[in-house]
Image 1 (cartoon, rainbow, N blue to C red):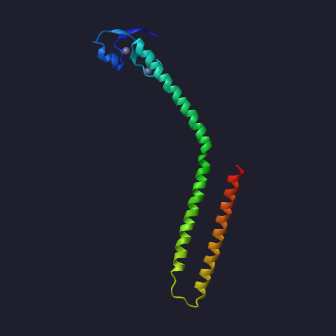
Image 2 (image 1 turned 180 degrees about the vertical axis):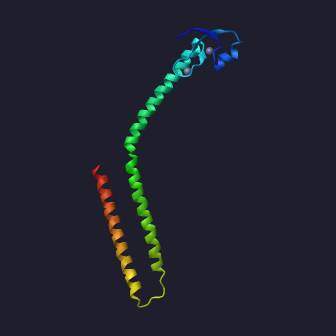
Image 3 (image 1 turned 90 degrees about the vertical axis):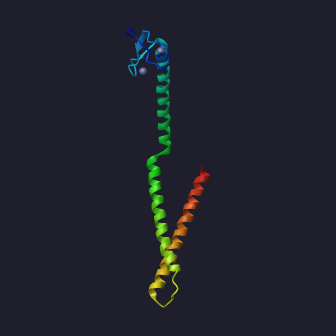
Length: 141
Ligand SMILES: [Zn+2]
Ligand SMILES: [Zn+2]
């Protein structure tokens, strides 16, 4: 460590120094600041602690990222989004069918209603199966 005389760049020292030159040392590790021996060691301690905390944070974040599994969540999110969009689309179609007031002998309306009934039945079935599966997974843990 090279010894120089000058002013410590720590704020406390700067305010009290009365511009008298003292022994200062450069912070060689991080910032090249010139500091008195007292502030250099404080500076080192703070920075060591920050580096340690940063390392700790890095490890913790890695752990959490592994547990979180962003890719899987993204896939599930996309699946749910598609599911919601399908539901909203179906909801529109069903609402329109339920609004039909002019009943007639048109085969078209009958077919549409029949198709919708089958679609909703299937959707309910799928939802029940899903519930059962989730239930089983829940209990097996
Ligand atoms: Zn430094
Ligand atoms: Zn100082």
